[in-house]
Amino acid sequence: MTVTPSTGDGPDLSGGAWHLGAGLEGRGVIVTGAASGIGRAIAISMAAAGARVAAIDRDEPGLRSTLSELLGDGHLPVVFDLSDSSAIPQLVASLVERLGDLWALANVAAVLRRRSLDEVDDEDWDLQMDVNVKASFLLSREAGNAMVAAGGGGRIINFASMAWLTGPFLGSDAYVIGKAGIVAMTRGLARSFGPHGILVNTISPGQIDTPMQHLDNPPELSERTAAQCPLGRMGRPEEVAAVAVFLASRHASFVNGATINVSGGLVMY
Ligand SMILES: NC(=O)c1ccc[n+]([C@@H]2O[C@H](COP(=O)([O-])OP(=O)(O)OC[C@H]3O[C@@H](n4cnc5c(N)ncnc54)[C@H](O)[C@@H]3O)[C@@H](O)[C@H]2O)c1
Image (tube, rainbow, N blue to C red; front, side, top):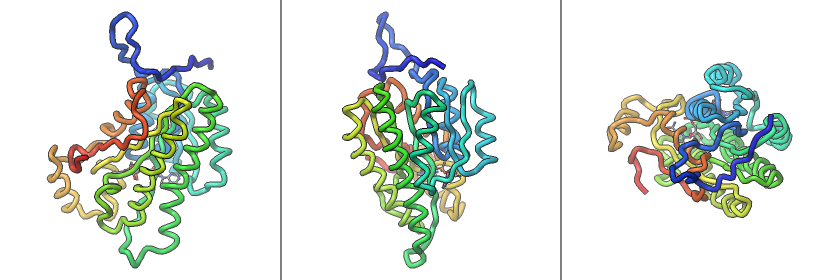
């Protein structure tokens, strides 16, 4: 299909009225972790905004379920294990070709293994670094370079956690060390790709009601944390997805290298 590149230069004020369109109609967007939680909500929201979504996850049934919820045509389900780093360049090249356009990448997939300090073994460390950090880095670099080559700008959205700021709780040390790395990585990529009109930002969720949130997390503790939020509740995946759509939209044309706190005020910075 022919896609008219959106400049991403900002809101369209022609005719004196704010153009409320996100500018995502027909654009190619890659979303990882699309079988569950926040990634699933982002895939659904991007499609609702008119994008064509390449939805990546290792969970095939979950991916099929997400695809059944996507509005519009041209979406691609991609069963892929992100710990397979050597296959990532080929993955991105094939998605650029199949989508025929790449406007945005959302690196949402992550794995959390709660372990006490002394229990963290090489396999726990390597898995969380490989999936949460290395795959995000390689996908960002490959997608960013493809966007540079296409010459039309683009967006990269990475995922940290509020714990990048607070430090780890409940045996999440290796995971949180990686999430702090995501913030640094985003800032570096924002400097490298910014001159090409490719904006790179991090979303830092607080307590969001997904399967990962409840992993080895006692319900009473989870409820106590929700009560500490000024809004008195956890966030919903859709509330994080809305921020991702904003960051991919024309409205975010001067947001770059930011770490967006989406915690309902559970942490404030
Ligand atoms: N839920 C929260 O409260 C919360 C808080 C802070 C940060 N986050 C971050 O938000 C993002 C989304 O988390 P979520 O809560 O939706 O998690 P989730 O567990 O519901 O979904 C994660 C998805 O990633 C996929 N995935 C994991 N390893 C993979 C691999 N090797 N290859 C391919 N896919 C893989 C899973 O299959 C799953 O579909 C993550 O980056 C997470 O760290 C979530």
